[in-house]
Length: 357
Image (cartoon, rainbow, N blue to C red; front, side, top):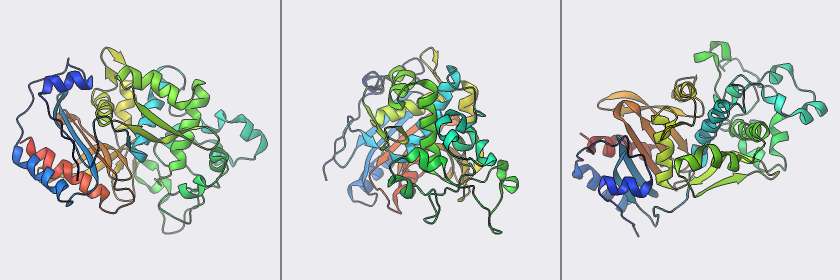
């Protein structure tokens, strides 16, 4: 197994990565035994297919390693972790006035569709917040292979937007919890089509391709120069498919940690960031869910703690822990593997956090 290793003094890494020096504090001392154990677990394939691990504390890179042929320049396919970036773009669009707010009605942005199709009034009232919280009334559930809106059904169609906008209203069987009886008044169902339509709304509202808008309002201000956005067959930017370098994923986490403020500019309104990483819905596994960000319940210091994260297939994560001034990035290619998410979360809780003590 080939491994590229990079660990420099904190200041040199800050300069190389372009991360903000203004917030830099003295880097904490790390317990090398926990980091050596992590690297041994990856080398032995006890932890499989991980490609990078990066840890920032108080704005300083204190640990950075690349594995399994990955390098600092690798564009990581982070899959659904991209949905969190789309949520950040919605916030940026609200901040610059392109969108009026999270209560804007989704179908209003697609008049050509509504002129040609009858839309159930309940769906006609779908808001951006419904999509951000994965609680729309579309019959769409990626965890149910029989669902009309399952992402695999969308992927094989020619027009993903029409596919989604034409979905039927969700029904609630007797054993299912209705929105009014659900935590936060929302019945959560994970639906990639929600994120895709958010990207389509952004394109309509801003008059720019999703990738171009992301570059203008988020990526260039953060110093992100290399990235890739996927597009649907009809040419709409995918709100859930990007590739980023590990250091650039860390920048995204740092922006959230800083409440949307970056080097003198408010890229995303602070109140939107606060709502984005606050419980807005509850998932089927008991996690909190904000605006396309996960509030994971993880064991930290012997107790359960909520850790907000970008999360994608394969075990790709950006963890943000404001009380510890910490951002951690784990990238992995363990796509569709049952061990992917547990082992990436374990990297945080069993290796990185203990190394800081």
